[in-house]
Image 1 (tube, one colour):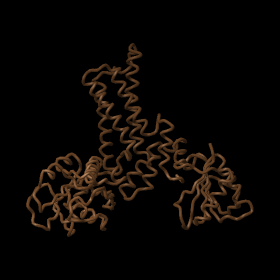
Image 2 (cartoon, one colour):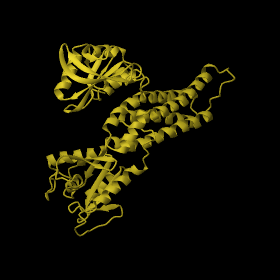
Image 3 (cartoon, rainbow, N blue to C red):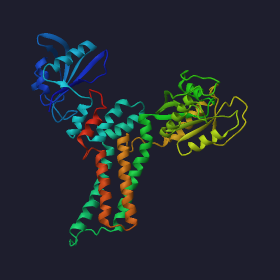
Image 4 (cartoon, helix red, strand yellow):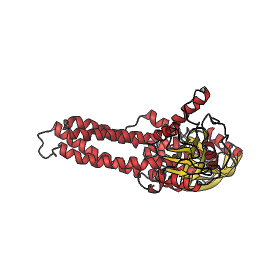
Length: 444
């Protein structure tokens, strides 16, 4: 195992910078450039005062924290050098380390080592960056929940149930004469599968909300041209980011912005007005808008209450009906010519109805129903694997109902068992592990 180092604090001026060092000889190598107490004799989890030298040249006055295997972040011998927070002095300390036996850590390499050294499983490792990036109390609680292995414990429990079923099936197949074994019938399997399926469905359901709390809500503002979409975007952002004009079709591409709304971030996308059109450039924008609708977590459909509803409006209502959405009747400051029970009245121009809109967004996304302490899947990789495992178990359940041979049902249960294992990093290909940790910053 090589000795690695990296700056663990944000780049720039500050009171203190921290340079993290790790590896089997890291304490010995830091000691070569450190003058103070002999680090080789310092017990783990101690911090000592001294100076860093490059040969005879004094570099900085520092505090060095010493950690000894296995009681360190990544399970390796480690040091953290707390130096003054200037850009130049931090770089000098780093370069001195690189000249004395260390190499620069790759992005996420410290956390990758923590995973490989069994200091944390894959879900905990992935949650590290979620904790770093958390922008609300709910996001932080959900990320810490994963970091503390709550999801891993539940998945391990589910795998234990499936492993027990697989073992009993194997005994029935390979040793049918063994009288003390459980007779695994369809009636025996079915309730056990139901139990696991229900718990997995609960995780998936809770995860839909946790992901948008952590990653933000991709929110598409859609509607026909000139209904007030760009005015609504500017109102929500509190700035004139989108061009507002009475000319239909002014917005021809996606205009983006972000706002905080309590415990969530709204990643706002103002799309081109959707209508039947023969203009090539505008048509490209309309096609982009339709793609954005498919990918969005929330749709804000803007209708003009001062103009009669047309076929394009009704088509949009139909297009978004199966996604979380709000229908906004804009321009309530003008004389309304239609009314529906399922709309929220708003005047984006005058700023009227904004609070009601924000409250309604919380309601539609069911944020208040979310319990951040319940286990949840906080990224796409985890979600896809859980859904694949769930499909396999539902196939096994369906096979039970259709009295399919138990030996064939065993295949689907094994598939689910393996997919759950991949979520927490068991039986996961090395190249994929490397790819996952490259998303981290250098000091992690």
